[in-house]
Image (cartoon, rainbow, N blue to C red; front, side, top):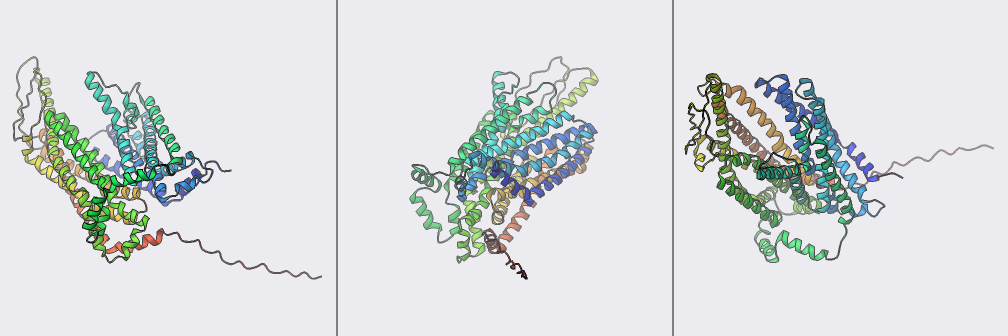
Length: 616
């Protein structure tokens, strides 16, 4: 009798997939390209071999950490919920299988590709050992921390998938769970240390899968092994909970009809709303009616708008510059979550239509392919348009204030360095005062006075008058325009990925990777190289010197990246629209023909054996 039969079967299937091989090759090539670009950037900065090795190892480590933390979103968040939607989960438990058989098989099968991809990055990270700046112990601890983060992410996606049925809700639940695990503990510990006015003490941070990466490169006695142990306990708790949930997830219970009715009302609205929407859109634009019926999408996005607006008002009331500097990190996380939302919703309709047989009805309906595609786009615009426009306006104001805060801190640091150098040369103590004048971001006056003690600096504040600076306004316009174009490109390309992909998680992964992740890394390195090699030397040789370089470096890199992103988005939108208009029916027909199970070919008839006559 075979032990863990589902586990063996899923491993065999995953090992034979071409995606397992090509994903490993693609990740290794991407790692080589990223390492080469990093070395080019570090060479332009004139760093030594040890410094280049340390910086390169840190960059590869954190990029790998971000990748493995997203593995649960795309590999395991929909593995069990997909079985529930297809109705095949209950068939597994008609046999002698147990919950740990199914959960363990799904977890290991979905983690195989991600683990092989991570394993392909380790030799590239190991090149930094030859360059110096990284010890063998730091390398081993970092690799172990990355494997630990991968296991935690996949286990989080598995437990959310066991409790969910919808692919988009499973993706959102996994995203928030991983986000809370990664950043919740460090933020809570930092808040406690700030309120008690004492050094940072890692207590809740031990539950974060990213904290072992922080402690892996620290010297002396650290909390690396306790953090790793706590992470393993949390991951195995998720796996155990999924094992208990899976056998009960497919069963119908008492009161299921009432619960389903309430859930349907919350998802699609009351009877009056459904009838009004049906009368308004069904005959005129049926695809738009099908896509925009779910009111919880729009309501949830309105909730996000109100929460971010409240945070913006709170930060504006404090007027502390440190909050605006942290806002850029918060904006990055929120933008990534919204990108995931739009990408998953864009391809979800076509995947669900293929699963339910709606695609066949659309193909025989008297509708043109262009009308179907335009109806889908208008539905997405109605669901997300107003909310995203408000978020873009909020981003415009916050981005300008955040950029001004970063540049002012850089100028103050440059002024402090100049004062320290002058103090070392002249033997006197310098007092540096930075004045903020409304309407000018480069109005920094440095006064030198011969005094023994320096006056206590006032808390740095920033006003709305900083929005009038033309460099900030130009960069803000470019960033907002590129963000809006990103959403449009994700919507159009996500619709095409929904036509060509089998699962919602795979369509979302390809949309995010091709539209955002890969071009974002390429444009980042291109903007950095262009700024360092071409523009910064001319600024450094000018009268402004290093202060000009510090002030203009983030503006130039941000502007170049935004311009490149705009060009990329225009290309994706044009290509996706042309493919959807021209090949919608052909692709739908091919997918339908390919998805239908074909019976195995009949064996060839075997000739009967010859009759041997035996002579007596």
